[in-house]
Length: 122
Image (tube, helix red, strand yellow):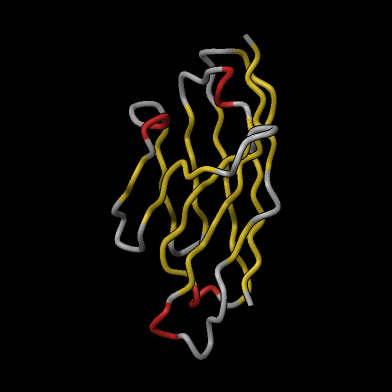
């Protein structure tokens, strides 16, 4: 029903910045909150930040003060601005969209992007 394409990853030096984008297409009415997760090699996937439809945001501790999540509802796109990057931020970053459960009969599952690699060198 919904397709998410995340992009913007790359190789940066410590202290640098990167901006990730996630464009949603398809039945975008199914999208409620959106967010970013990341997974480093050998580790479990972890939440980075979320943003609700009304703009309310949440940040996990490692992202606080350095990352900013935003969204453009008209374009069905969510962004993650990452500043002051550290080598520990190296991971595959995945875009996520929660389904609107008030339309449960139409929106059956949550959605994931394919992932974009972020590598921060020391």
